[in-house]
Image 1 (cartoon, rainbow, N blue to C red):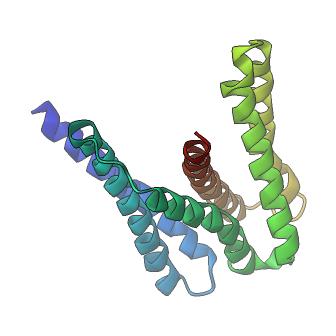
Image 2: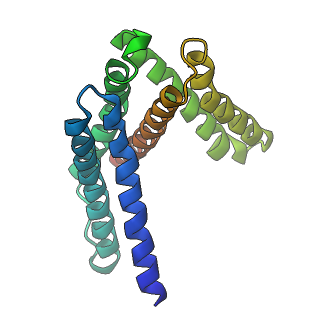
Length: 191
């Protein structure tokens, strides 16, 4: 019985995750097309993740190695999507901010960089000096509040902040997943 409930919980969480990601399509000029497109795109990415996880499970039984190209391809796709999504959002629902694509990508790099530094402080450097974990959490709190601080003087409406934070969460998840995949591939090649 607990296996069935666990499976139902996983299915519901995957559907919610795809639905939340698909809602980024609401930030485009043509939501009727883009919401399903984002949903299908995320379903494909999650399908690749599940496929690689199933191969990894089999690896312990049959010592089958997950192809490096699969890790590289889905990592690169995730990182590229993390840079494309903010540009689409700024040209769609947040068009009134009139921000150029270059500035959007620059701010995306800033947020990704700050988030990566925060997680790096927490996961890596805190092993040597525990106080760095606190600094890492402070960096992440600052990074999560920064989009609202930057956009509030222009438009502090709930819909704008909602779209902005959906984009921020999608970018964070996709970049971190892609970065982790590529990092593991590079470490494996160097070994």
